[in-house]
Image 1 (cartoon, rainbow, N blue to C red):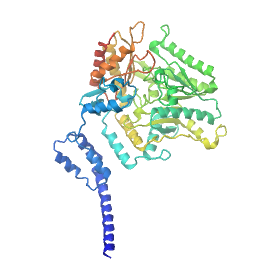
Image 2: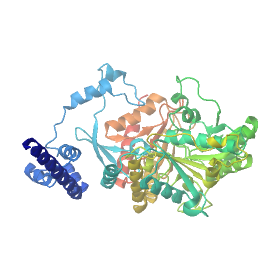
Image 3: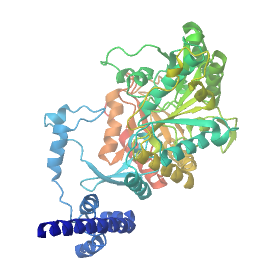
Length: 562
């Protein structure tokens, strides 16, 4: 009997303990993420004060909460691994993209000093040195570094729903899809712009999805022959098999074997390198005529879509005219192909409008005023990078009702059986609820701070400062920009326009890096044509930081080797 009484008493104690834990858990959540973040970020001169703040969350909370609190220590409390050991481990184990690492592995030089924090337009190394990031990570940190509100949003979203299968839905996913549709207005006369959004976790995946959608759309209409995708030389569309096949950069593909069939390249508009007897308008006419001839020679009934960036970014910052954009739209309509805009880089404010195709649907009637023509709209649009400002991986592929309706199982003309009428792919992390919540908050920041307009204004300032400071330098052939996407083409001389040798052009970003400024270059793209410096800083960049970029590039040009 005594043994049984003890068991009953024990069970009662377990019940009370669990009940107390539930109450404490609710109370602990009310302390809030802001207090935790502030205690983590602000150096504490009095460790006891920090411990008193921690005591507001009971030590009997869940192990997860206790672990979070224990890791949120001030700089004084952190045990920092010696920098040299950290760099040695980097050389030994971390494989960087787009980087030759032989010298690190052979211990001839040390790898870069790791980055540990960031703010605004700058990164901060583990040795405390601040570096101005002139390419926003990888063209993606549009809203700038150190946005506490994005971190708070991610924390709360992860606490509530850390994951769900992509075949299910969450409020964040639904809200973000609705917001994107509203922003795009692919069909303005329909509720919320008539768009439908398929989420991925990267821009490459978004473009792969676009190709599948385009091909299946035509199959659903009985046009089974339409499978070819027209893209452009120098453009970049991703690392996966099909998106790399659409990419027009030879050095990104060499050594990886035969690429998928059905991808055709045409030349892009390149006003700086047009024939010297052609005006810009004549050059655009010639490029469009070449594209039309490609339709004819390949057979118009075999072309599923054209994919294009509104402005070719990593391929050399090649900026077309609105005449070219509208001309491509006209060719698609004439021959029954779909138009895909790849806005992975140009989306979310980079070119001075929320989306790049909106910025490119204008023409300048005077130096200080723009007249807006009708917006040239795609059938499919892909996006990533600036969608979350790089804070979490997220991509998307948006289509109009016209496209989406052909994925119903009631088509009489489809070559597919009705059981295969839907889009038959899935991405494990596509539409991740935490990433969608961050994306939604990121767009709120971009809109509330009018970052597209800031990109336009600061882009004009930076472009004009570059022209004034280095425009006459003998190695600078052309400076071109749209919003905060700027290309500086380097040449051996201004008359012949011979591209600057790679070892010479590569010396400029290297010099800038030594002076704590990151400047991009179109390296590993086209043999002998990696001669364009690229700037795409966070949209929050200020004039002082723009001046620093101009000054460092100006100094670098004085130290170019022969």
